[in-house]
Image (tube, one colour):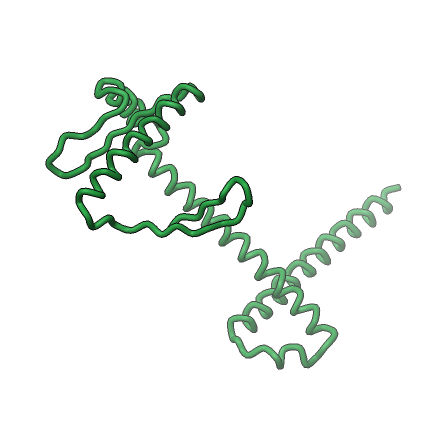
Amino acid sequence: MYFCCSPNNMTRSMVMYQFIEDERVRNLTMRKRKASLMKKMSELKILCDVDACLVMYETDDSPPDVWPSPSEAHRVIQRFNKSPMWSPNALQDHSAYLQKQIAKMKKQLAKEKEKNMKHLMVKCLFDENALREVNNQEVLDGVRSAIDSEIEAIDDMIKEAQEKAKKKMVFRTFF
């Protein structure tokens, strides 16, 4: 399926492509479109100063049509194969990139879960019925864990404050 717009009225019309059954018509269409494609490749190369080539096989047993020439196509294909973007290592790099993105998203999800648990925990402080709505054991365990973490943090702050207070008292006794 292909959508196209006419330049005059910018409305979209749908063109359906399908295999051409009539061999004579198919070969004629192939010749016309191949010539048009090669002309477009030539224009692109000249207008944009890019390296380009075209290799097209009409049938399995026919030799390929090559544009602009076999030697130039070979040079462009070698350049493509040497490109670090398409090397086997690059594919592994893409895989590593995806693995990093997955790990990053998992970390972000864990932070959001923790944030939601803290929010639910605070809600529980002000509404004794807040947990009655929760039917998921994992959520309840998460709230319990969040409460335990907050209690540990508060205990640590209390110990730290007591140690600071002791140091100030010792300092005052000497002066």
